[in-house]
Length: 144
Image 1: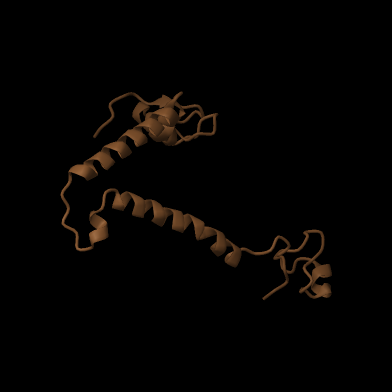
Image 2: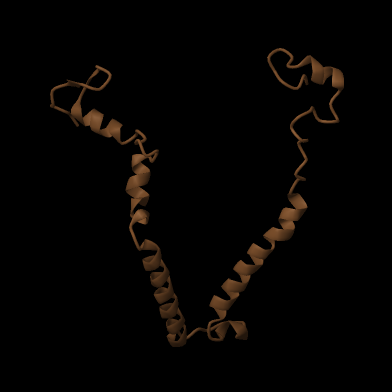
């Protein structure tokens, strides 16, 4: 693919081809702080009323799928799976379980608020001589 447009100078004074400058403009963040590709892919989410459209669209799709559940003849090995709305209720319960299990898991894994100390003094488990001497060889902490 060739670009037969004559070279022109860009903002910094370099000679560039028009096509190159157009492609290069797509990789620069705008003054709004939004990348152009992000604007292309997700700009539609800024439209007024898009939340309402998505809410009603999801609701309509859900109702249609529940109505389709009445029509579809399933041959399940487990009798409970053939009940009306089983997969919807099972999925909702599984999602609720996963969300609610985040609370005890967070309590188990979360560190205390004072884990790193109060920030005004060196941690208590550091040798005071090392803490007073400051960085060693341009590295903080004085470790090996």
